[in-house]
Image (cartoon, rainbow, N blue to C red; front, top):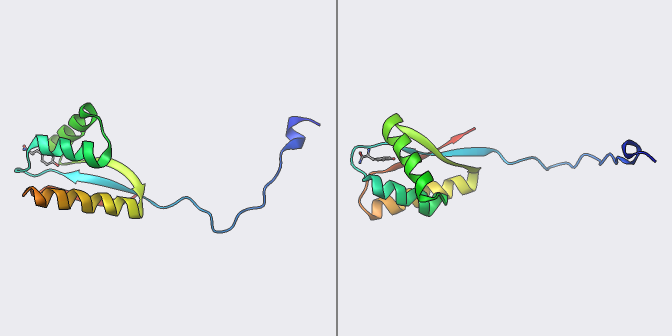
Length: 100
Ligand code: TYC
């Protein structure tokens, strides 16, 4: 039997689709310290110091940047964690999500 003949056609599974994905973005402001934004990116988005610094600078220069792409519930949790941590530290940092 050839490799092609061995191919199994699986019946289409119903109810399995890839989840809708959401971008999580940070927005620039004039007050949040750069170092705080770098810590946020390390802590909540698992970025290295170098990656976090590049993303922070992109937000600072361009107004916003993508921090990560996640299914809806994870994106919502990240956003809430960032906003809570920022308010605890009395910074106005904004974090939003956007459907892709
Ligand atoms: N613009 C801020 C400053 O000059 C730094 C900053 C970067 C703030 C990214 C928010 O999402 C942000 N201190």
